[in-house]
Image 1 (cartoon, rainbow, N blue to C red):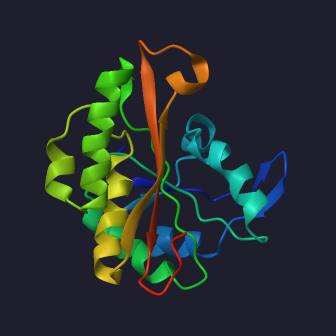
Image 2: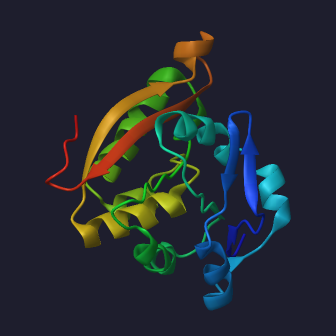
Image 3: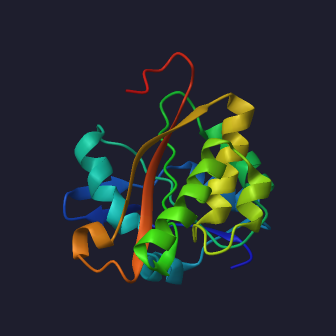
Length: 187
Protein backbone atom coordinates (compact mmCIF):
# COMPACT_ATOMS: atom_id res chain seq x y z
CA UNK A 1 0.00 0.00 0.00
CA UNK A 2 1.70 3.21 -1.15
CA UNK A 3 -0.98 5.49 0.22
CA UNK A 4 -3.01 5.49 3.39
CA UNK A 5 -6.61 4.43 3.18
CA UNK A 6 -9.50 6.37 4.68
CA UNK A 7 -13.01 5.02 4.74
CA UNK A 8 -15.70 6.81 2.73
CA UNK A 9 -18.61 4.94 4.24
CA UNK A 10 -21.14 7.03 6.14
CA UNK A 11 -20.88 4.79 9.19
CA UNK A 12 -19.17 1.74 10.66
CA UNK A 13 -21.32 -0.84 12.40
CA UNK A 14 -20.22 -3.13 15.24
CA UNK A 15 -22.31 -5.41 17.47
CA UNK A 16 -22.54 -2.46 19.88
CA UNK A 17 -24.05 -0.06 17.34
CA UNK A 18 -23.25 2.43 14.64
CA UNK A 19 -20.27 4.79 14.59
CA UNK A 20 -20.52 7.74 12.23
CA UNK A 21 -17.52 8.53 10.06
CA UNK A 22 -16.01 11.94 10.82
CA UNK A 23 -16.44 14.63 8.15
CA UNK A 24 -12.65 15.19 8.12
CA UNK A 25 -12.35 11.98 6.09
CA UNK A 26 -13.56 13.77 2.96
CA UNK A 27 -11.17 16.68 3.45
CA UNK A 28 -8.18 14.30 3.79
CA UNK A 29 -9.11 12.67 0.49
CA UNK A 30 -9.74 15.99 -1.24
CA UNK A 31 -6.75 17.95 0.11
CA UNK A 32 -4.10 15.21 0.05
CA UNK A 33 -4.86 12.71 -2.72
CA UNK A 34 -1.20 11.66 -2.97
CA UNK A 35 -1.25 10.55 0.68
CA UNK A 36 -4.83 9.30 1.16
CA UNK A 37 -7.07 7.15 -1.02
CA UNK A 38 -10.38 5.37 -0.68
CA UNK A 39 -9.66 1.66 -1.06
CA UNK A 40 -12.84 -0.23 -0.16
CA UNK A 41 -11.03 -3.56 0.00
CA UNK A 42 -9.08 -2.26 3.05
CA UNK A 43 -12.36 -2.00 4.98
CA UNK A 44 -13.04 -5.67 4.28
CA UNK A 45 -9.54 -7.11 4.80
CA UNK A 46 -8.11 -5.10 7.73
CA UNK A 47 -9.26 -6.39 11.13
CA UNK A 48 -7.57 -3.96 13.53
CA UNK A 49 -10.55 -1.59 13.52
CA UNK A 50 -13.20 -4.20 14.15
CA UNK A 51 -11.16 -5.56 17.07
CA UNK A 52 -10.65 -2.24 18.87
CA UNK A 53 -13.93 -0.41 18.17
CA UNK A 54 -16.14 -2.33 20.66
CA UNK A 55 -13.68 -1.43 23.44
CA UNK A 56 -13.83 2.23 22.47
CA UNK A 57 -17.63 2.11 22.26
CA UNK A 58 -17.77 0.66 25.77
CA UNK A 59 -15.47 3.25 27.37
CA UNK A 60 -16.10 6.44 25.41
CA UNK A 61 -19.15 8.59 24.90
CA UNK A 62 -20.64 8.42 21.40
CA UNK A 63 -17.98 9.55 18.98
CA UNK A 64 -17.22 10.04 15.31
CA UNK A 65 -14.65 7.76 13.75
CA UNK A 66 -11.90 8.64 11.30
CA UNK A 67 -10.31 5.30 10.41
CA UNK A 68 -6.97 5.38 8.61
CA UNK A 69 -5.32 2.17 7.42
CA UNK A 70 -1.78 2.60 6.25
CA UNK A 71 0.97 0.51 4.79
CA UNK A 72 4.63 1.34 4.50
CA UNK A 73 4.54 5.04 3.74
CA UNK A 74 6.66 7.89 5.04
CA UNK A 75 5.28 8.59 8.53
CA UNK A 76 6.22 12.30 8.46
CA UNK A 77 3.52 13.44 5.97
CA UNK A 78 1.03 11.18 7.75
CA UNK A 79 1.84 12.80 11.10
CA UNK A 80 1.59 16.26 9.53
CA UNK A 81 -1.81 15.43 8.03
CA UNK A 82 -3.33 14.16 11.28
CA UNK A 83 -1.81 16.86 13.53
CA UNK A 84 -4.67 19.36 12.97
CA UNK A 85 -7.19 16.59 13.74
CA UNK A 86 -5.60 15.66 17.08
CA UNK A 87 -7.41 18.18 19.26
CA UNK A 88 -8.31 18.27 22.93
CA UNK A 89 -11.37 16.06 22.45
CA UNK A 90 -9.64 13.56 20.18
CA UNK A 91 -8.54 10.06 21.09
CA UNK A 92 -5.89 8.87 18.69
CA UNK A 93 -5.57 5.08 18.61
CA UNK A 94 -2.81 3.20 16.82
CA UNK A 95 -3.43 -0.54 16.63
CA UNK A 96 -0.57 -2.94 15.89
CA UNK A 97 0.75 -6.31 16.98
CA UNK A 98 4.35 -6.52 18.13
CA UNK A 99 6.54 -9.54 17.26
CA UNK A 100 5.02 -12.46 15.40
CA UNK A 101 5.36 -16.23 15.89
CA UNK A 102 8.53 -16.34 17.97
CA UNK A 103 9.08 -18.54 21.03
CA UNK A 104 7.80 -16.68 24.11
CA UNK A 105 11.20 -15.82 25.62
CA UNK A 106 12.51 -14.54 22.28
CA UNK A 107 9.30 -12.56 21.70
CA UNK A 108 9.53 -10.99 25.16
CA UNK A 109 13.11 -9.85 24.46
CA UNK A 110 12.21 -8.52 20.99
CA UNK A 111 9.06 -6.80 22.27
CA UNK A 112 10.95 -5.20 25.15
CA UNK A 113 13.32 -3.62 22.60
CA UNK A 114 10.37 -2.32 20.54
CA UNK A 115 8.54 -1.00 23.60
CA UNK A 116 11.70 0.75 24.85
CA UNK A 117 12.15 2.39 21.44
CA UNK A 118 8.53 3.62 21.53
CA UNK A 119 8.85 4.88 25.12
CA UNK A 120 12.13 6.61 24.23
CA UNK A 121 10.46 7.86 21.01
CA UNK A 122 13.48 6.62 19.10
CA UNK A 123 12.53 6.36 15.44
CA UNK A 124 16.03 5.20 14.42
CA UNK A 125 15.90 2.17 16.71
CA UNK A 126 12.43 1.28 15.46
CA UNK A 127 13.65 1.45 11.87
CA UNK A 128 16.41 -1.15 12.39
CA UNK A 129 14.56 -3.56 14.67
CA UNK A 130 13.52 -6.71 12.77
CA UNK A 131 10.29 -8.62 13.50
CA UNK A 132 8.93 -5.56 15.20
CA UNK A 133 5.43 -4.16 15.17
CA UNK A 134 3.58 -4.70 11.88
CA UNK A 135 2.02 -1.24 12.29
CA UNK A 136 5.36 0.55 12.36
CA UNK A 137 4.26 3.41 10.08
CA UNK A 138 1.38 4.62 12.28
CA UNK A 139 3.49 4.07 15.42
CA UNK A 140 6.21 6.31 13.95
CA UNK A 141 3.61 8.90 12.89
CA UNK A 142 2.27 8.91 16.46
CA UNK A 143 5.79 9.37 17.86
CA UNK A 144 6.40 12.31 15.50
CA UNK A 145 3.12 13.88 16.64
CA UNK A 146 3.90 13.11 20.30
CA UNK A 147 7.29 14.81 20.07
CA UNK A 148 5.70 17.90 18.49
CA UNK A 149 3.03 18.04 21.23
CA UNK A 150 5.37 17.15 24.12
CA UNK A 151 3.37 14.05 24.97
CA UNK A 152 4.87 11.61 27.43
CA UNK A 153 4.61 7.87 26.69
CA UNK A 154 3.91 5.31 29.39
CA UNK A 155 3.70 1.52 29.15
CA UNK A 156 0.35 0.45 30.56
CA UNK A 157 0.43 -3.28 29.81
CA UNK A 158 2.42 -5.95 27.96
CA UNK A 159 1.45 -9.53 27.22
CA UNK A 160 1.66 -12.10 24.47
CA UNK A 161 -0.73 -14.65 23.02
CA UNK A 162 0.88 -17.56 24.87
CA UNK A 163 -0.49 -16.19 28.14
CA UNK A 164 -4.01 -16.82 26.82
CA UNK A 165 -3.56 -19.79 24.48
CA UNK A 166 -1.02 -21.74 26.51
CA UNK A 167 1.17 -22.15 23.40
CA UNK A 168 4.53 -20.57 24.23
CA UNK A 169 6.27 -21.85 21.06
CA UNK A 170 4.78 -19.29 18.62
CA UNK A 171 3.41 -16.14 20.20
CA UNK A 172 2.33 -12.68 19.10
CA UNK A 173 3.22 -9.74 21.33
CA UNK A 174 0.88 -6.95 22.45
CA UNK A 175 1.39 -3.75 24.41
CA UNK A 176 -0.71 -0.81 25.47
CA UNK A 177 1.19 2.46 25.59
CA UNK A 178 -0.55 5.70 26.49
CA UNK A 179 0.68 9.16 25.55
CA UNK A 180 -0.14 12.00 27.92
CA UNK A 181 0.59 15.65 28.51
CA UNK A 182 2.30 16.65 31.75
CA UNK A 183 -1.05 17.94 33.10
CA UNK A 184 -2.95 14.70 32.50
CA UNK A 185 -3.19 11.98 35.06
CA UNK A 186 -1.50 8.92 33.58
CA UNK A 187 -2.84 6.57 36.25
